[in-house]
Length: 76
Image 1: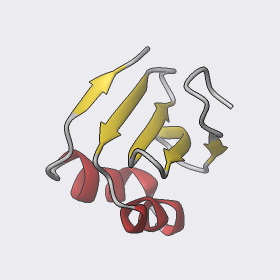
Image 2: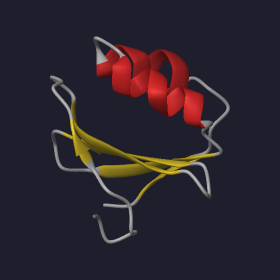
Image 3: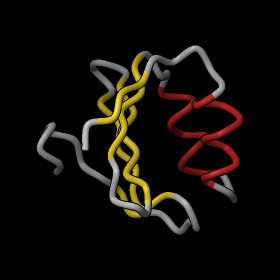
């Protein structure tokens, strides 16, 4: 669990260290390899599932989340 009450799942990626999802609030948490933590608001569960199952987490994140309509903020 991170300090926001979300379980962070380690992933194999050159850019992303771990991801977590708050289903009740549709918030995606992404911890990058530089240890920064971002949250993305209004992310549907299907996008989180897609990210989890993507062969390249960074590519999926850039194409579907970062360029999507999801407001984000850096938490750490």
